[in-house]
Image (cartoon, rainbow, N blue to C red):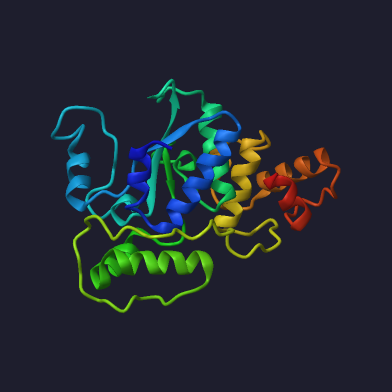
Length: 254
C-alpha cells in the first residue's frame, strides 16, 4: 500500500487495520491493487460530507450525519482499486465483488451488500450498532468503542476501558504493533432459519461464486440460500444437504 493508505490505517481500530492489510495482500496476489482512501472521520467532517448534494454542490455521497457513520468511530474504511497509480472508481463489478469476498473471509461487512444505499468501497467491522457506538463513545471516547468492538470479534477483553473521560473524535493514538487478523466468530453449523453475520459471510461467498446474487445477501438463511448451498455442495461433490458445516465452510472459503 502507499503511504497515504498506511497513514489512514494507523488512525482506525487496530483490528480493522490488520484485516484490511490482509485483504490488500490477498487481492494483490490475484493482481488487484487497492488503496485506502477514507478512514476515520470526525463528526464535523461527517456533517460536512452530509451537506454535499443537499446544501453544497455535488452528488449525495452519504445518508449519515456526524456520529451516524462507522467511519466516525474508526470502525470502517473506504477502499478503491488502483490502475496505473490512479483510483479506478469505474472498475468492473467483478473487481468490487472480489474486494467484498476477501473482506468477508476476514469477517468484515461490505457496503456492496447493502440494499438501501449500496457503498462498494466500504468495509467495516461488524458487531456494534451506531447507537451502541455513540453510547460507548460518550462514556469513554474512541477507546471505549474500540475495546468493545474488538471484544465482540475476539471474545476477549473488558467491555469498557479504564478511562471514562469523553474525548472528541480526533486522531487516536497510533497502535504500535497491530494484532494479526483474527478469524470470524465461532463457526456454528448453519441451516435454514438461521440469521447473523456468519450467514451473511456465507451468502457473500456464494454471491462471489455466482450461486447467489448480491441482492440475496441479507444475513437470513432462507430457501434461496439453502438451494444455493445445495448447488454449491453438489459442484464440490459434497453431501448436498443445504447446511453449512465444517466441510462446506472450508470449501466456500478456499
